[in-house]
Each structure stands twice: as C-alpha cells, then as structure tokens.
Image: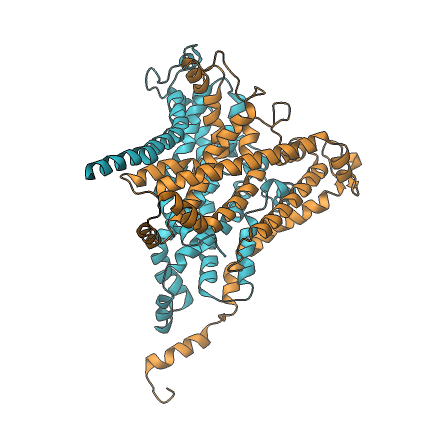
Length: 312
Length: 282
C-alpha cells in the first residue's frame, strides 16, 4: 500500500488524521445538547422537589417559610383524609383505564389488522382520537354530556331508557363512569396503535403452517398471537399505567376534581395544592410520595412481568 | 357444498368484521360530528328544549365570533409558532441523537437509551414547581420560549427512538462508502443521510407537532398574559368564561382539532411501521 502513490489509496487516512474531532468523542457531542437540556429542565427540578418537600414554602403564608423537617409528610399521612381518598381514586382510575384500554385496544387492533377494502381510511379514522388533547376531549364530551342539550340525555329519553335529564358529570351515580368513558375514547387508540405495530411484525407463514395443522382462529389467537404480543402488552400497560396515573389535563378541565373531590386524583390534588393554592412545600410532599409510589410500582411490575428479560 | 361455505364465510365476515368496524367508526366519529353540528347552531337553536341533531343552516357566525371576539386567532397563531419552532429544534436534536445511537458504539449508549425511556415516566406535574424557578432564573416565564424549551425536553426522547428506527433503515454501507470517497461528517449527514431520511423526518415532525400542539400543563402555569396563550390554555379559560355559549366553544374546538387530526391521518401509517420496527425496544 505504502509504495502505491495512488490518490484514492492514500486519501482516507489523511482525511481521518485531519479530523479535529475523533470518532470517540463525536457520538458524545451529538447527544450532549439533549442530555444537558434534560438534566437542566427535568432531572434537576426532580431533585429540587425532594428538597422542597422538607420545607415550609407557602405563598399565602410566607412568614412560616423555612425548614420543616418531616412535618409535611407527617401531616400527609396522619391528618389528611383528602390524601387517602385521592390515593384510592387514583388507583381505581388507573386500574379501570388500563384494563379496559388493553382489552378493547386489543380487539380494535385485531380487527384493523384483518384485510378488507378501505382499511387505510378505517385505520386513520379509528385511531385519530389518540391525537386529540385532554382539553379538547373535555370539550367534545361535555357537549354530549350536557344536561339539557346533550346528545346522551336526548338519545336515551327518545329510546325510552331514561325518564328525566341526568347531569352526567355531577350525578353521584354517573360522574365517574362519565370521565372513564371519555378518557377511554382517546386511550384505546393508543393501545390499538402499539398492538397493531407488533401484530404487523408477526411473520405470516406461522399462520399458514398453523392453518395446515388445522388450527382455528381462537387457537391462533391464544397460541400464536398473544405470546407474540406479550412484550408489547407488558411495555404498553406499564407506560399507560404511568401516563394515566399522571394524566391531569382532562380531569382538571372536565370536573376540576369534583363533585365533592371525588375525582381528585393525586396529581390533581398536587396541582390544586401547589399551583392553585400556592402551597409549594406541601404540594412537593404530595409529589414526592406519588413519585415513590410510581417507582415502586414500575419496579415491581418490571420484576414480576420479566420485561426485557431476553435482551437486557 | 361450495355455496354453503361461501355463505358461511360472508356471514362470519359480516359479524366478526364489518359490524365491529361500523361500531368502532360510530363511537369514534360521534363526538366529532356532535361538536361539528353544535358549532353551526345559533344560541337559540342550542337552548331550545327539543334537541336538534342537525343545525337549521350552516352559519359560520360562531367561527368568526371565536376567531375575533375570543382572540382565538391569536391563540391559534401562538400555538402554530410555539409548535413550529419546537419541532425544528426537536428534529435537529433527534437526528443528532439517532445518528449517534445508530452509527456509533460508545460507552454509556445503553444508559442513554434507558435515560430517554425513563423521561417518559416522569410526571410533569411533579417537577413543575422547581421548573418554574429554573425558567424564572432564565427569564423565560411568560414567554413562548418557556413552552418551546419544555416541548423540546418532553418530545425529543420518544422521537429520538422513533427517528433511530428510520436511521437504522438506511444501510450503514452508504455512509462508509461516502467516507472512503473522502466525504466529511457534515457532508455525509447533510448531503446523503438527511435526503434519504426525509420520510422519517416528515413522520417525526408530524408526531412531535401533535405533542407540542396539545401541551397544556406548562402553558397553563408558565404563561400569564392572555395574548400569549396557546390553544389548550385559551380553551380552558373559555370554558369558564363562556359556559353558556356552547356553540362558540364547539366552533373553537373544531378549529383546534383540525391541525392534529389532519396530520395524524397522514402519518398514522409511518407511526405504526416505525413502532413495529422496534422504536420502543432498547
């Protein structure tokens, strides 16, 4: 090589030596801006919340500001019925959302994975609620839940199922189901998209060979499809549980935690305490407890389900 | 014999496929159609005791009312500007990250991937209080930059993983060949990789845009001047303000729905294929 004076042969090494930044440093340079920004805007504030939770820090009562020790946590666990009720409501909310979104999302995904005419259009329409924001969900569903001019009351009265008008979002019997259904409307498409993506990665010939063996649709589902989907189901339910736990925009705008604080989940309680009432210290304590809950849940869930066991 | 099987097949398809599809489409479309129909009603029509499913006439008064009187035009432009600028930065960050993760082996690569996934699990509401003081120190409170910086942080991680699956789809040999021909890193990235990555860039942009367009919590807490509200924040305050004027609110909602819904319809295919090629796996 050295003896050949060809331009092509000698150029690459010269080029490489001429580079001011080596291949070892370059990948780090590429990811540095993102890493720095996340550290500054997300990681640092999270550490700071832990510090704030040990402080008295209340905009409406600034004379008491200062180190609080564990008094915020003591109050939270011994003298705050709303805290315990919001834990229960959060649990109910997350469980119902994840279970129904998974079951219905799986059915939708299986249907949309079948071959039929106009599938592209049907898919685009069925999955579109995923792109609708929480505030807009509130708008769309409030219009239908409205006591006097909403669709539901009118439809059910015309069909003879209801006798009088119901205030769906205020009535004790219906408000929880009402917010559950509205959130399901945008949550089911999330599961359908995730599961549809993994359905498409199942090789066709597996079904062909199972058809030769005379397996029916139900057996295919149980023995081929579901095992293939296992990893995505575990991943999607975990992500979704965390998102539903944290979801705030729809409940906040639709019921504002009411009636009688019965839709006040932990994040709503924290938002109201910290942002609306200005009690940063106590709000941070609620945040820290929620965060520890989530981490514990995620760790247990990953351990029990064995997620990522194959390639980790 | 054959005829019987065919009839059985048609029946099965009707009950297992066509009827469920019809049910799904009805459930998805009714909220949209109800809002659309309400947005054309006059206040009297809306308040009349007999509920009409269709408006008497297509009147666009509610639209011009929210656009001008309720400053919806301003909110719309604010949202457009914030989301647009955010997306430009998100795309640059995502391409850099995805290129690094896809083409280089380096120490901490796995950790960085897990770090990106971990950000998806952090509740925004948890760190919003200290974030307020961080932004205050940077003089970003009540400016669109607070939303832009936040959008970048929130949207870059997942979109990086999505972008990586598109970069992985471009054979490594192409950049190796270019490198042997003497092309520098910048040439490889801008002249070769980015043009080939264009479909991925379009999909990721649309995906990120929807996320930015829908952002609510930070807009609600960090923006204090009415003229700087984005659409979700403006809508939230309109719910309190115009609780009587539902037709106007419906018109506002339809306007707010148009960009994300149209974008989603176009990218839905890329999103599914991007996810299925392993965007979310480590």
